[in-house]
Image (cartoon, rainbow, N blue to C red; front, side, top):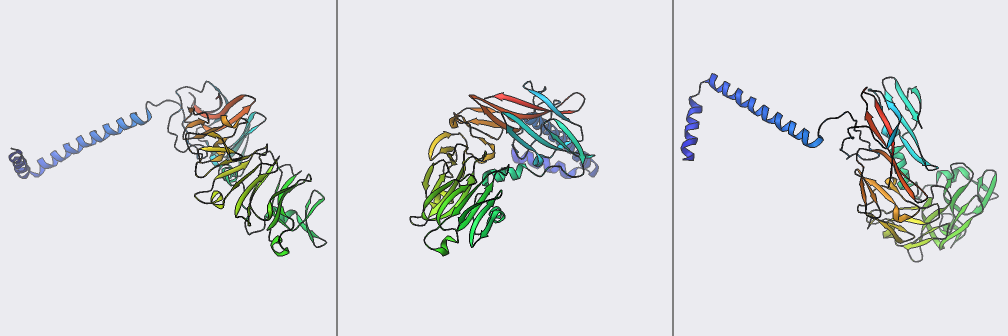
Amino acid sequence: MKWIKYGMIMLVSITLSKSTEAQLLKKLKEKAGKAVEGKGKAGSNSSGGQENNSSSIETSSVNRNATAKEPAGPPANGKVVFSLAADEQFLYDETAVSAENSAVKYQFVIRSREGFFLVENGTRTGPFKVAPIRSRNVSAEYETENNNVSIGDNKDEVAIRYTKTIGGKLYIVFNGKNFGPYDYVSKMMVSPNQKNFFAVVTIGGANSMTTKMGIGNTFIVNGEGLKYKIGSGNAVPMKFYVSEGFTHAMAAVMDQTDQKIYTATTAGKQTEGSMADLYAGGEGKMFVSDKGDIISIPSGSPRQILVNGIEAASFKVPIESISRLTITPDVSRSVYYTNGKLYKADGDEIPMSGILFPKVITSGNKTVVYYFKVYKNEAGVKDVYLCSKDI
């Protein structure tokens, strides 16, 4: 029966005149167009829901994957800190958001037809012909995770700037004072206020040739007379870190005697590992806290936070970016933001999609997340809200 029906259809189609065929094709195209249009509307409704007068903005530094829209009304837990005209937009890579003295400080660069504007903690200046602050988000994230910590074959630029040979011996000359002598200065970092420094240096070793290459007795020194030894007398400095508040430093050295990696801080904290821990299988993330603790996220188990080699916190998701991780004074209460959610080390997760530049601040026993949201008001102006939420 099916073949008879197919044959009849073929016979009818052959006997159709050209004009009838054209009309039939036109009707088929119209039906197909309506079907496609209907599917498009259905897809739009299912993915975005009803339109509202809110503004949803993506940011490369916070979450490229957040697709949820802003709420229908302005945020109830925020206040307007500045506004954007219809033709104005953020330059996300020129944005800086930081926490200072339990408060949020911010700098936004705005681009418009008139040029560039700088909004700094609510104060707007401009227009400027070029963006008034250097690119920060990408570089800040890179520097936070890499922290210029690696010690390579090339001489450290900061060390070159501050070292001098006096009477045939090498010294660090800092703020008019001589520190040393040393055989080699592997790496040096200067505090933001230019009043102190930390450096990893070599003083003596197996022989004069290797010590001049930075292999031997390794010490961390600073501008206040500190001299802290790491490893044995046959160590090679591999990495060097300084805490955010510039209160402590940390170095990782390879002891050539036993081929082990020793990581130690100026607070006397130390961990022991192998070369595989430092490089193989994707490098783990590590830094030193202002208390002098060794904070690390192992490459093999990136959901963990270790303090001096012992687990202090664990998340549901891997920690892929240190710049989105906030270590609280009680490490077990630390938080991590990714893919539109704020993850807490205690296992809780808080949906927070559609937000910009979250910054977590802990004061005493209280932890608060601050963030920005953009809402287009009835006049068509995009108000930027600074919001907060206790977590």
